[in-house]
Length: 217
Length: 217
DNA sequence: TACTATTTTTAGCTTAGTCTAAAATAAGTT
DNA sequence: AACTTATTTTAGACTAAGCTAAAAATAGTA
Ligand SMILES: [Mn+2]
Ligand SMILES: [Mn+2]
Ligand SMILES: [Mn+2]
Ligand SMILES: [Mn+2]
View 1 (tube, each protein chain N blue to C red):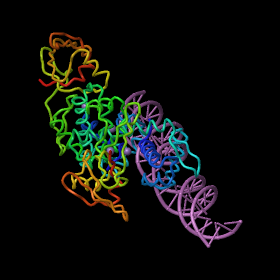
View 2: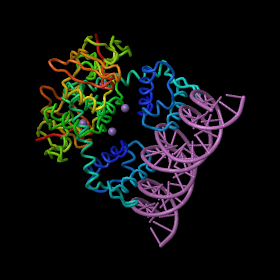
View 3: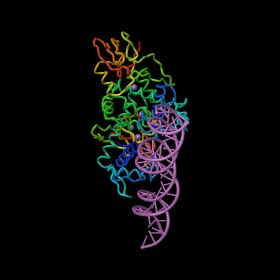
View 4: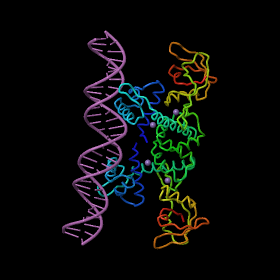
């Protein structure tokens, strides 16, 4: 099928396209892939040859139908493996990303079908991200970023934007997890910082933290 | 650490060294790796540079201490994953080899430690092969090849040499599995074929089959 | 508009791993 | 011992994927 590098690039382009809606800049891809723009251009051109992306020099890149299919299949595998690692092997949610990054490239339809069944067809991964189904459909959930909520609004945490270890450990330390109820007690206009209520406790959080928490109201 | 190709070559050399006791011929490696002798030579020389094998031109290859360590670690991972696939995901024993061939290269100490625990520290893989422990020790079991047994001797099947789908399916069809009791009812000197008793049934088997069944008497 | 800065692409080089064809060595046979 | 065959190694070429440095295109600004 496709190489590890091709799969990783396609996944990366998919995520960037979701975020910014529209053609993705070569630099953005290079940055997310931790590589140089020249390397990214090179790979983009190969992906274009294989009709996995459509690409016009200097104008940016978008995934084609088949590019999306590959990307979504990899994302499905990644998230299913993350569920396995947390649910079955008792990893913490901040420890699974690196390993899933490798496992997502294992080639076997049957393996994923059986893994999905073994895990009882989970809908979300440990970070609250939806798991695409076999046909690539992704459940769209209504959610907003905590930083966009206003005083006295409340909701439950349904996902995180960042998945770095540091960020997830920050949340662990404050007992904030997927499913936790969060209420905005105060919001500072100057820097976007907030005071929030989590269970019986109140915390001060910076705008940067608030921007990385997805809330369902 | 090491590349996929390096790991596969080391594993291959390990198996060949076990079988024939002594330096391994370049052609044997090339054949087992399904590649050309020139490619094998190339890789052997790279492995020698890294002191994973000791190699003298035209004389053959043997693993060094550190080469053995790498090979055994990969074999441990391969066999643990095979147990997972059969025990947890309900694969048949003839379906797991290909997938384990990929999974064995996932890099994470912690993952294997936890997988081993999750599987309740199995001693053998689905084909009866021993699983090396964390320190690389392999349990040596007393076993002989069925073809070397004589009339009226009996024992139980503890392993298979071949692990190809065709061979394992042949055994399935005759209800021969790890743990099955087998008795030699007759043996033909001319071609080494045998009549064996398995449960209530008797079978004719060729020498080639008998050579691939390991029996504990 | 013209100049400058940023982004993107091209050109050329590197490494891992493969191949074919040819050369070198070892083994087998009169 | 000399010749023939088989095995192994070398030489040279290829692809995927990366890099640096230079060129080209685009965007921003005076
Ligand atoms: Mn990956
Ligand atoms: Mn995730
Ligand atoms: Mn392998
Ligand atoms: Mn096995």
